[in-house]
Image (spheres, rainbow, N blue to C red):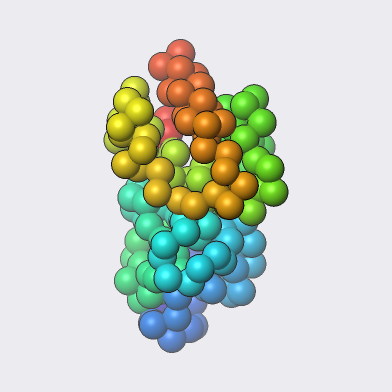
Length: 157
């Protein structure tokens, strides 16, 4: 039995410890905002926060999160009020939208570590792949979210 808190809610998961966290989140808990992309931890579609740190859920065994807190895109805010989500909407970042939950989770983690990121900080932190190529809008949204946070928005989670 794996005991994990996901988006503030405690779960006892009766799954093999080696099961990827991604599948526990999607198939067992039923939260489908975290996406499957490559299955190798390369693309970032499956990005979540584990105890506040960015992680790729497709390569994280669920056994590794026993006793930990996981935040998915659904847990960032229930109503899109998180500054990163607000900035994503304002900058019209998504094209197809598939990678965006992972991008948003990566941006929130970046802003938690670097509230005023430089272009270099953004380039290093945002390793997620966007097949539509919306990288300039992603950068603009991160800058907008940083400004919203500086004006007293929510913590970057």
